[in-house]
Length: 457
Image (cartoon, rainbow, N blue to C red):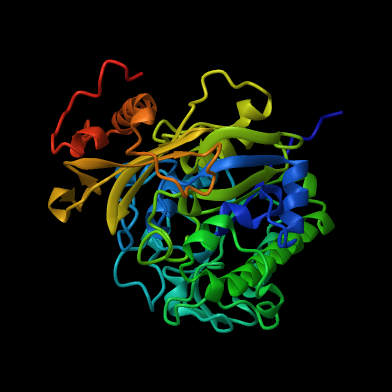
C-alpha cells in the first residue's frame, strides 16, 4: 500500500485594524466581546505580549507582509508603496504550491489608489484579490466597495465586517482541494475617517454605553466617552466573524488542517497621547491581541515573552514546514510553544516614523522610549532622526497603563542606563545608525552627552 503524502496545512490570517490589547477577555476585558477569540486562543497559543513594531497602518502592514522592520521595507509612513521585489508571505507560500488570496484593506500601493483598484504588480504577489488600498476611503460601514483580481469594481452587501467575512468563506469553500494561504484584512475597529467616528453595526453601540473604560482612558479622557461604545460594538462583530470562519473550517473538515493567526496592526489611545488615535509609544498603541491555533500551535499555552509583529511571518512559514527566508528580521515562535525559551530576546523593539519619530523597547517590566523634538532632526524619507531625547520610562509591573512617567526620576537612573543601551543595540541590529541621544539627566542641566555610561549593560 502507498501512503498518501501529508497535506500542507492551510493558513488563514485574521487581521484587524486598530484593536487594543485589552479588548479581549484573556486580557481582562469584562464585557464578553470576544468569546470566540478567547476560546480558540485558549486551545491554541495566546501571545500575551504582542508588540507591533510600527503603530500606524501602512508601515505595520509592510512589516507583517515581509517580516522586516519598516526602516528596512522603506514603508516608514502611510502612502508609500511596498517594493515590488519585496519577499512577502504570499510569494513564499506561492512558491511552495499554495493558492494565495487577499481580501480587504491593503494600504501598501502608494499614493493615488484611494478610489481605484490596486495594480497587479503592487499586490505583494497574491493570486486572488478582492481589496482596496485605503478601504476607509473607498467604502462606508454599509457600502463596501473593493476591486477584484481583474481590477473590476465590486460592491458587497451587508455591514463591512460581514461583507469581507462572506467573501472569505466563499474563498475557503472554493479552495478546499489545494492548500491555501488567505489573508483577511478588516478595516474594523478603525475609525471611519470622513466622519471621525467608530461606526458599529446597527444595534451594537447602545449596549456598551457607560460600560467598561480602561484605566488610561478613565484618567486621560480623550474621545473615549464618545467613541468606546461604537468601538466595542465593532469588536463584537469581528469576533462573531471569527466564529463564522471557524465554523466554516469545521463544517468543511478543514479545522484540523488549518493554521489561523489573529492579530492587529496597532491599537487606539483615543486622542489621549497625541492629536489622533495611534502613532504613540504607549501600550494603548503598540500592544495588540494576538493568538494562533491549528497545526503547530495546539496547546501552546500562554506565551509571556515579548513577541514582535516581525516574528509572526516566520512563525507562519515555520509552522507550515516552509523555509524562512534570510530577508526576514523576525524569528519563529514555535520553539517557545515547545518550552524552548533560551536565547529569546528580553525586549521587543518598535519604531514610529510618522507625525513623530521615536524609538522604544518593552520588556516584561519596563518601557523605555526616545523621541525627537524638532522636525529639523528628521530624515523623513528614511523615517530616522539625527537626534533623540529620552522621553519615557514606565514600570509596567506597577503601572501597566503608563500613567506615571519615570524618565526624570534620579532613583531610576540605573534602569534608564540599562534600557538606553539595550535600545541602542536594537537600533543597530536592525540596520540603524547609532543614535545621538540627549539623556534626561543631562537635558535638565542643558548638557549633551554621547557616552551611555559604564553601568549600561
